[in-house]
Length: 139
Image 1 (spheres, rainbow, N blue to C red):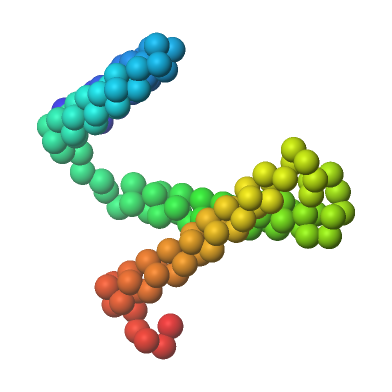
Image 2: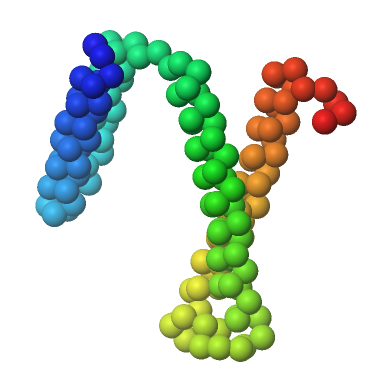
């Protein structure tokens, strides 16, 4: 199976799962939604096991650069969003600290914890891969 056929099958499976989940949500049948997602996962596993598509150096380099760029954009954006959502609520500076907008402080706390988790996860994985791939202790 080549890459084009594999991508076509993935698209069909994704459309199937989306269709089943949308029907399940409109009918308030969450069991049907779970069953549809599980069936899609099984089909994807079966298709992936038959495909045996190998990644070359170019694919690996592209995914590495995409991951670095995603981290470089997402981590600061999440941190800035957390800061902006937490800033007004501390000094009763704006409408965010009263009434119906009070949930934004909780959202800011969630963003702050997520950004800290993301930074810690990146640091740990960098340390592990640095040792695994032969990085010295002086780096």
